[in-house]
Image 1: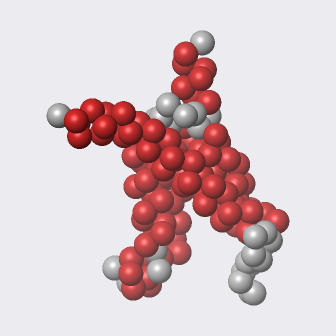
Image 2: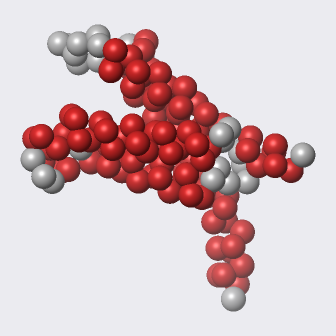
Length: 132
């Protein structure tokens, strides 16, 4: 029983931690595309409207996920973006994500789908706004 109480206490908090870390990491992908920071894009990457759009979604969507504002709708959009990214950039290189380099896109896709269902957790702007 003591373990169940501990799980009940920490599960929502760890949901918030997962959301914060995912948002922070996702922002770096957008920062790379938009600002060349923390590392520039690989040489030869075309500066296209698709790359710019992905950068905006990743940086600003990641920021919203990080702070937990509009978590559910933003996570839904980002999940879809990662599904599109997987099928446009990775799936053509083979079926298995380990082979085609799409593991991160698949993981982000399902992580954001989970956040869409679960919400931002107690340590989020959404939770603060809900309490008011």
